[in-house]
Length: 254
Image (cartoon, rainbow, N blue to C red):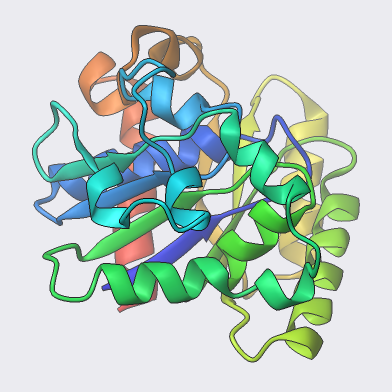
């Protein structure tokens, strides 16, 4: 069982889109996958077709009232399960009096609760704001994928993520390794997108995935229909890009 966090301190970079569609592509290939929505905004939850009032989330697990296995929902998609999110998750952050002591709580809960299950991949969709939810989600993971939008401030955002990881390694023994940086929302019509790709690959060539996720209407539409792109439009450019990314992901992680 491998734990992967999809994280970036910056919002709007394709983080949730990547979490949903990587999970769906893994499930499509026959891998038993658990998608965990750790963002109180619950976009991954609604993005696979569930309402925000399902009554299930990590919150009751974090406060010791319920078991993790009782929060898992089977999705309509073969091999893909979900732990939803809701706004209560934001309350948990506010209740922590010793933040550093709680950094490893997710890691402990997930690894103890999922022992003996059939999941091969656990994908955590982190909130974009730097806080205990994001830090816990990162510490819980073996590997980290950092999506970045092909825009002017991409390298600046990466520098902040690298600094966060360095700080985590000083505070806890179990910080994740970076599996790769995924460039998203690429617009072939603009020189800026191409320049960002070149700059990122120049500065950190060994960490960047070869696959680039384009900006497409179908990828943007799919969440509003509660479907991964593999179900919403399996023949679209966006779907083919995420399938290609998943193949690359599998080669790197094994």
